[in-house]
Length: 218
Image (cartoon, rainbow, N blue to C red; front, top):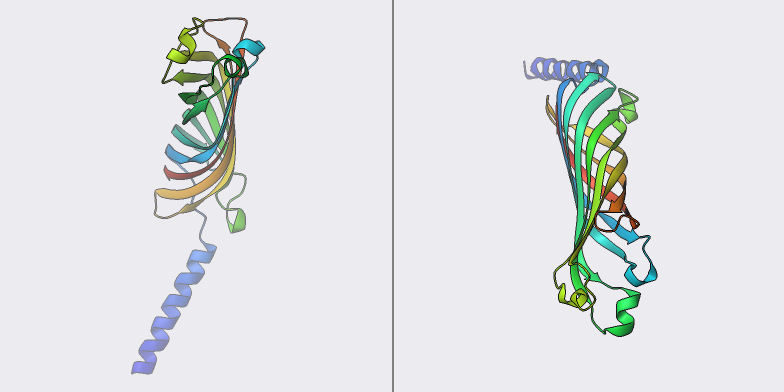
């Protein structure tokens, strides 16, 4: 009797495994919601003259992205994207260091807001839920000084903000953990170019590389 029960349970388990192996892979369908967070490199620099030049780089900048949209087919998701990267630390200027032996703490940010796509090229196998994506839209970057007295001697503002466009590219993979939720990770690059809102002749650039972890609902 025990032998028959064991054989029956074994066959049931074997058939269940076979059914899972031949079942259609899960795909994103309908509503799509995605949150990403991570750390990475962030740089903000200007094309300004030597006097006002700024070149700031941070290794452990924080990052957050949210996407809201929908899957139009099993391979393609279209979504609105909001992305922000930020870091805090010291800001230096060759010009000011020549006259003032002081550094000023600052917060550095870049933003991206616009439409984006996520493409899942394959279903099933090792490439299941592997994806590439991108977004393009409004971009902004800024340097916000926490001790603006450093610049007041020369009439410089306590913050610098540039507005223009932004671009983000990503590649990664997801794993389904339930019928509607998946976890994943990706590597992303974000570029922001903007014109100084106070000095139109000055352009600013921001580059960011991130390792991000994500959770998706579909």
